[in-house]
Length: 305
Image (cartoon, rainbow, N blue to C red; front, side):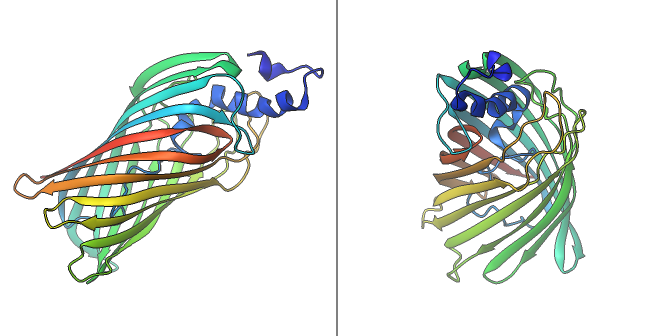
């Protein structure tokens, strides 16, 4: 903890680490995100394709292993700084038979459950917490479908519903509005090939200490190929940027902007007779600035009702 109050006699490197040490102590639930709430990389192949009218459950089981903490240049901070986040995000989607702007209209909600364990030597932090995270309500989901393309627009709010009292608590301590825009293109008429790009823009509201956290923009993409046996394989990745620096003062204030880039692989299959699909993926964060860097393992489960 002494790094948060580094004396003038410390060298320049130590002084440069102070903001990040404060960030991991006071904003550690953001380990999976850039800023805000959304976790990039969970959608993958055809992530921008809205399903036809109906009711759906989608579960995102995520294991994120933190390998190191990086500074503003993307270099690892000294010492052993590791941790993990195990999460299950429960998403309920209902697409109606109503049309708006010639798109299928629907709505959704996301209820995440997670366990976070952090062991950051540089900040003297050893914290472990479990619980229900901040809940998302999305009253607008619009899905368009063309002969060889799909598109989506959606909007909603992440509410400050979870505890944020400890470094590893599941809550962020602030609300954020999220705007989604994306598309999927199918190069061939059989739609066996696909390329999708899904962007999420998050507008973060002030937290309880009146700190204005910078907005974030994240894009996750997937290049997929469906084989004759129905298995779908693909290359996936995500890129995220904090667009403005935080504004405010006090012990919870953290300067600097977060940036994340990752690349990975995905494989999935859907059983039409069961109305059930599953996809597994691995992503490696190959570049991170001002935050934790690690590897993500996830399994997506989709059930059609």
